[in-house]
Image (cartoon, rainbow, N blue to C red):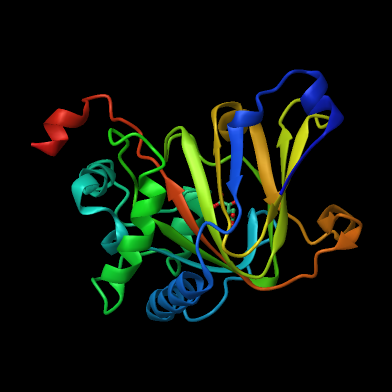
Length: 247
Ligand code: AKG
């Protein structure tokens, strides 16, 4: 599921800065999550945003789901709010996508939220309990959609970013901002979970390309397909610290 470039290995970059759990969820959980994501998206974004030429993501729908935050870590939601993010929880390009006013948003508690939380608890449990999380973000990329190379806004979220992949497969490339020979390709197969941290989080761009050569995996081109990713980001600790916000 992970392919390191020769440059990545020769220059001694850390293999732990990105990890993938294939089959993190089973078929039944995949069906449930895909259905729940559809329901949330339907309420919040009925059409795909084509995006403009200068935007980093094309042909997508998205929303954030505060109802899926773990209760015991709900403080993260309050932190996001205190930091002014409740109105547009856009992790990639806050000013542009806030301006179009159509994507993003918050949802209320729905019929299946309890079952979904049970699955998501397994994600939170991979990290120390001191971690606080922003609301999970659903990104629905159309079969003709693409994500251009970008580094997630470091002012928006913290040290670790991950995604649970649903529906179609894609290949994502992570490339060092100063040295394109240092890269990692990851096969984002349905049911898999990946996380990037450290250098890959801050010093590498990531992208999902429509270029067939870049979508090659074990000799075959991964066909373009609609894909939903459920994205996880930890909240940055505000300068005032957690305590004052939590109380
Ligand atoms: C992002 O949210 O920054 C992405 O690039 C999405 C990646 C993914 O869909 O796994």
